[in-house]
Length: 345
Image (cartoon, rainbow, N blue to C red; front, side, top):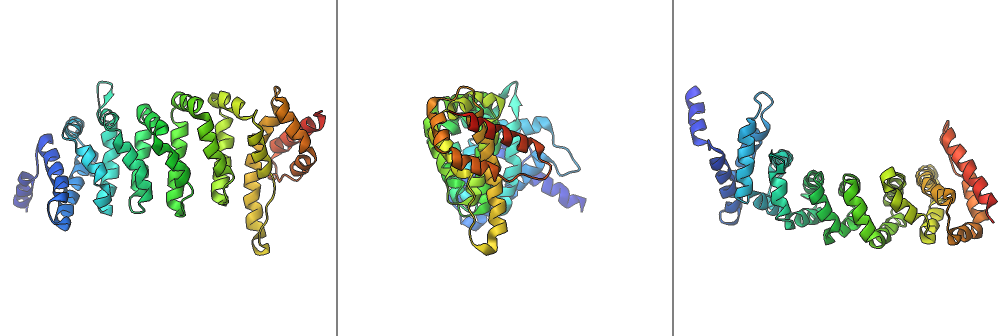
């Protein structure tokens, strides 16, 4: 038995250069050999790569070897091959690739992340990954790979400022729930991982961003509407987003959206509880944004006028705002906002 293991060991590539050459050749073969045979070679090579850089649970990978393999992968443009051939790969290969991708991106020489630097020089690969949300078979794999990329500020900055970013406003409303949810997670990471990058992006793309985001808040899809208002209520109230919040709460168009979200919409009687619970979640999140408009000590006159014009309706909505049992803080905030609106003149 040991003889066969020794023979198999001799047949496997033994140096980082040989390992990567074997991977590269198998990917290039996808376009030259019969597809089934080529995929088999890719599958074997990616499985071997996973064992080399991740280990097998018993033997830990050699860190120096992992770094050398990573450097060779960048040098031989294997990252480009891997990304561009994703649609051709089977489920098992994509699973191995997702594990390898995380490890490869973390490798660095001194303070330079090798694969991140490679992607900075091949930004079209990020656009390709974003576009893969349209492919049902690989959307979730690409989502995982993108979120790994977004951990690095230069890559997140590129996606935010690229034309690809606007695609997320479509992806979060895709009919496939799993893909839409995954796209939303990636969207959230883009807007929360790097405070300085996001602040710069929103300062220069404020109008464009919130015009698109307002469409999500007004979506006919309940899930989209609920997730959009929930994220907004958390995002605006973060301390580091205070400048964006101050800009947001002086616009009547956004105040009107919050008032609309405070309203109860109940559909068919057989689903009253479902829609009541749904509307409750939306209304409470909307209240947490609405209260900032009202509590703002420097409200512009246009906001005051809008609140006065809608005072009767808004007070009714606030009195009927549902609260969870024992949620005294929400009740206190609601009472303060009611008093503030009643004082307006």
